Length: 459
Image: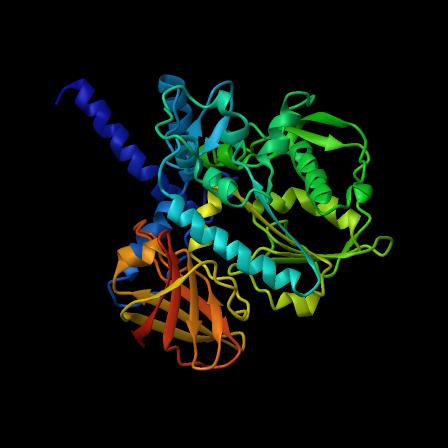
């Protein structure tokens, strides 16, 4: 065996022996990654245990974080690209979240029919809230690549004409699309509005968005000033660089406000801004807010909680509108990130189906439509999930109304889907009701107009 072959053999044996030695002696490298790790599986004799154990070992073997960090450091130095399928290395030290690339390149993962379904879903939610005398606003937090496309790598090319959110803007123009105010502010802001090494906006970007939301709610007079922003050279742990370099504590620059002091208290102990439910109380202020949100609203908590007497933050899907009774809000805010737009087609907002809206145009009678019904009881409500046999027909629907023998009700043009791991989206419609019902007829709208048919679905 040549000296080179012997060297390679020794290196391979060492690479196998070091993790085993670490396991035997309890040695490991630090792991600062925020990614969830696979739990240790419960032993049982079935086909699932092997793959589950393999996932656990892949996440937990000793010195994993050091090996992953070394790999990505070497790859970045040699090729200038990221070795993670979740992170894209941009220009000038910027990193981007891979799931946002489909929006940046204007891919067609959502089309105009999908946008029409989402628009109808928004309309149902808006009417439901506003008919109870409350204000409602939908806020879309733009991807980092939408606000800072100049830092995207040159090898990623735009292939389409529009980002999916632009279809929604054309259909529902009066919602709060925060990219407009952020792009405007970007031109004069003293600092960047997004973190270089994180998927999210920084405190300055979130403050700009906070002021815009209050303006849209006609509450600009309540907008608080927290002093001038300044840069802290270290302190922010970027979620993207933590994925790439888990053995190194990420400490990027952060934006802070000198006058940002908490005037509120949390109703229950808050473990992190990612908690599913957070409720804050500020006895010196007025008004109550219910906010359905994702991780972009983490940076809003101080701002909104310092502005309103009570804020209930719900980081849970589906959106539970029974919280209107529990929280009794004056304002309901639905915030989500641009990259999560397609999730609007995967979960059905949990609210009692309202009486059917007025139909715009003539109603044509057609034959029966068939499919399957999935039924379950959720939070004292009856949930019906309809999956039509004709999938292409279901894709064309953008509004659906169902008849229970006495009244017509508005359904969401959404088939609730728990598993989309194969990226295969199914189409249908769904609704919640306070009582069990037998659905006999359907009205639906396509680009050709409104139709009515017998509903021949089986459970």
